[in-house]
Length: 216
Ligand code: DX5
Ligand code: ZN
Image 1 (cartoon, rainbow, N blue to C red):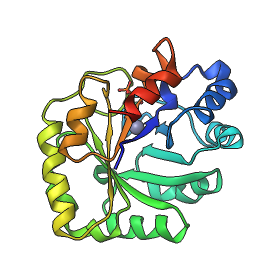
Image 2: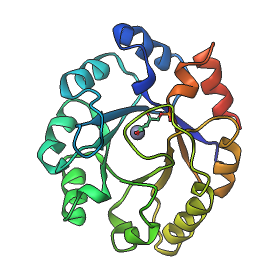
Image 3: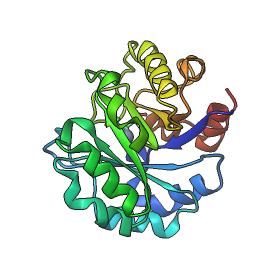
Image 4: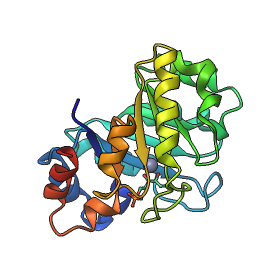
């Protein structure tokens, strides 16, 4: 299977969001990754529901919404209503993760779980059947443009074997510091989807960069 790519609009030009989304529509991107930060779960605030809705109005690709927020249960419906196809919540923010994942699926969205760099993949073993996507953080969440954490390669392998042992079809997505230096190895280790923010949007030709990532 060829690798899928989810450019993160966190690195886009917010003053020209419509043209950035149109660029993604015309590209080989598979998803549009939307990073929601509340200034509590992570030490940064990005944007919220109205901006996600505006992105959705122009997007021709599914929105992959990454909620870096405390108590995400309060906002699942709002993000589904404004166009999320995938909703990922952080394991570290969900005391009743099983219930939260069921709630996401009941809303008709794909259920994702994001895990921080320090969180062992084994913590997903009892909910593997409830998950459509695991967003494995390869940086500490909160900011774009950070350095990729090398331990991620081994961690992806462990997650792949865990999901296989549970018969789970969940996609493995890698989020943070992804570029052409680490993409192929991530794919070899078992990644299905690569999120890329700065590497795409700060490049000279973002569409071509997306194509390059797709064709590793
Ligand atoms: C980090 C976000 C990422 C971020 C990735 O907290 O979850 O999605 O936008 O950006 P880069 O690719 O620049 O590391
Ligand atoms: Zn993200």
